[in-house]
Length: 85
Image (cartoon, rainbow, N blue to C red; front, side):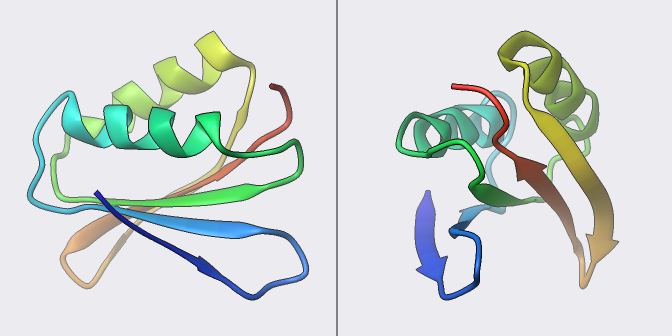
């Protein structure tokens, strides 16, 4: 997992899980979530197509919000808003 925080009005963490297969991307997301605060944005990059349904299940389980899931430049880019800790 490679993680960087960029400068935005809202804390924004990028989690790079490209090349990792299930359950890697969700594990990486969970680690970033544990360090987050309500209002933070986590952007997850993945290449495993199984991440799409896993993200929805993770959001339901944790009570957080999937803002978007898009294909960009050969990777899946998911944006999640932390609304519950």
